[in-house]
Length: 440
Image 1 (cartoon, rainbow, N blue to C red):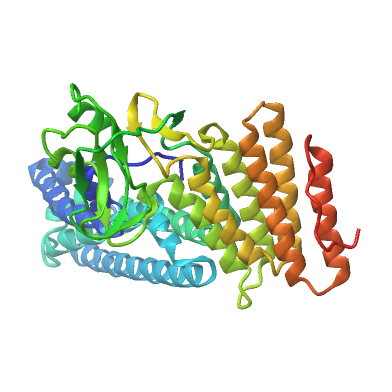
Image 2: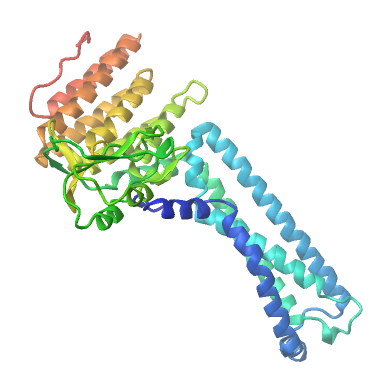
């Protein structure tokens, strides 16, 4: 799936919920199929079918045979639709059980699955309508040959698409593919930020959450247009992915705005977290898949290593969003918009801690992540990134070492973990962490 940024306000969020599912496109197919079938049958009655018969292109020698073949096609289309839907349910059940239930939100948005269901549904409804118009006792010249040809062509396309769709479903279970897509999306900066001095004065007005739930996105572009001409600092106290209680402050204004409605319409709140939250959801999804892979019931540490690699790539992609202590993230097109919770530290600090808690029992994963952090620090150091960011990576590597060494009972494993931390120090300029309690 291609990388994409956050959606807009409540209107865009509602449209996404209506579109990103398995029923909307098939529903459209059900509504369109009778119209197309009616158009084809009308063309048949206007001479298209008679022309096909007179040119010798007709495939049937009797109306009874045409009816039997069409009935067989209707049954095959119904069987294809049932088969494909059953396979989809099986794949989703197995995949979510092994990888994480929040991947469902991504798979519901897969175009191939929705297109396949819509195609199968369209062909079934179309063939049923044509079948209903065939008179088994009519002369062969009066059989709707043009419509029957359309049914046969659609059936052939259906069979070919079914093979492609089942192959795509099979690839869905290949977790490395999903991890790579998530990592690619997580590497892109959804909301650019710059460091700014925080507003230190009083706040005149607060916009509060109308309900409890998870913030899905903040449509900053729309709010910028709505507040054109309004002066004073504006602080967004919540970030996408954050849970809010009803009445909790969403936005603070230095000067009261004309109204709360434009702001509330640009901050959709949902009952659950979803991919609409963009980068914050994708980063946490990588950690969730890694944690599930490292659970005793699955024990797939190579998937966890793949997640560690993609998490490192995401960190590299967001280096420019680092904000030093004492500063606050601001929105570049309108720097008076303060965005606490949408900078580098807010995005990666909690996920890295959650990753450490899961990886501490897996020395191979811990070593891989420490090495990834070392490579990152070396790369970002060459780019003259802020010292605070490099210190953050160093601290994350040290904490992962300490936790893993404390949980590991086998001495050679502790030595390997300590060696990984020494490699971190050797690759980077500055004070190197000392592995506490390591057998070096």
